[in-house]
Image: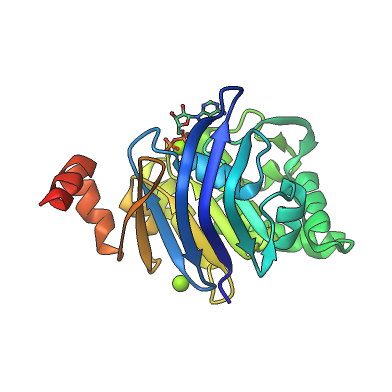
Length: 250
Ligand code: ADP
Ligand code: MG
Ligand code: MG
């Protein structure tokens, strides 16, 4: 059965119940890489937040099935323990909690088992080295004073340490310089295997280097209006969404 099945999803927000997603369908299997594209404000981040169980978004119709379990109305905690991970467009700063203690707590919460401290430290140090992160970052407060690129690397470090079954990456490449994008891309590649899946929101093909993109979805008017193979990424980057729509109308 699929890793994730989204069926006829309707999501509303705020006191006025503004409809942000309506009739959205998506199926993701283990081993797959999906890319989500669409103009600003199309609802891409909303979809990821709703999948992760962000309480600001209310599901008013449809279902989210993850690893065979209906999680439509479960809390974000339950979803994280079930193996879902969301990397935010703008990661939060958490004063008072170091990157290492945050990661160790998260790993313990996700696996439900006590984490072996030394082993965890060693693996974390190795992953940080692979991500070209200074080792001193392990003992710094999470994201506090981190540059944009360092915050994104810290998110990828979480991915590598927590090894979720489904990774939702929301513009993990935005604001990164060319070298940092390469490092982040290789981190994503190192994480991905036949047992997990990625949904990546991006406007940039560079982050996808080294990954085999299985499906590209275009979000518009609150639903997925087009699905194509990996070649759709460059088509959109070169032609834009308007040209795509005009193509469609022909
Ligand atoms: P994207 O990530 O595709 O740029 P978003 O999902 O962030 O788009 O936003 C989709 C639309 O929903 C936008 O019009 C945005 O203003 C609105 N929206 C998103 N979150 C909220 C919220 N918490 N409250 C009110 N409106 C929201
Ligand atoms: Mg794959
Ligand atoms: Mg967004």
